[in-house]
Length: 256
Image 1 (cartoon, rainbow, N blue to C red):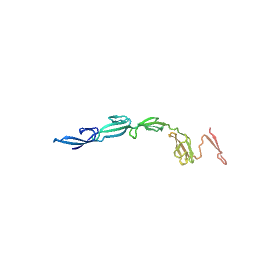
Image 2 (image 1 turned 30 degrees about the vertical axis):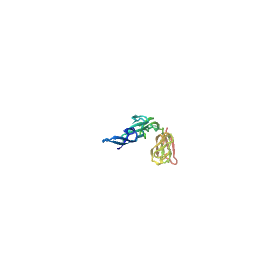
Image 3 (image 1 turned 135 degrees about the vertical axis):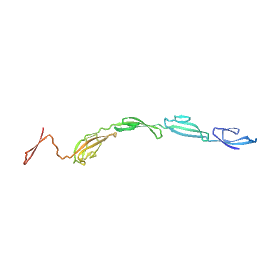
Image 4 (image 1 turned 90 degrees about the vertical axis):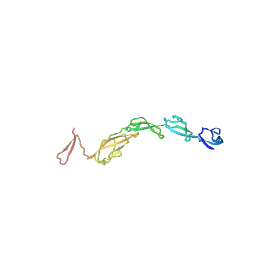
């Protein structure tokens, strides 16, 4: 009789008069039901040893159940499992941790602006911490140092009256210099009265400082007809002789 038996590595079976732990062909002499000798040839084989190894990364502060317990440290751990053929299967797990992600940034804004940090809109100087998720799925900590710059002090003393028939006037009265102008009739740093009807117009001067913060000031320019006749207050005018024949004298004298 011929038969084949397959065992798991490490197991043994009694054939050929002994416990066998190696693959091979073993012969046993048995007695049949008729009382005669019966030879049984057994081919003994062993399943190939099942080994596997994996490498896995987890986030700092997390744990993984390998080697029979929850592991918190990097290392290589062995687990004995059961394969599909019922034999032991050894699994080697190399456990590593992603490097914890930290970052720090310096940010500046201008007075009146805000930045969303640490779960709220921030308007004042300070240090703030935010948690986000990095590309590996772990927590990433960002520390932000926020500086709020004051706005530049900008003044404008311009209030003036111009004539409608004037072509251009240079704008003036700004402090500090180096900014830019805007408004109706404004062309660069000049104002063009002849391009507008009579009236009062608001002119804005804007200035950006070295921190890229912007502030502005406004004043007015009045466009008048300017006919050439002006009212004279506090003056007595005498005209004689009256009636006049050949000549007329106009005399101005102070009323005070």
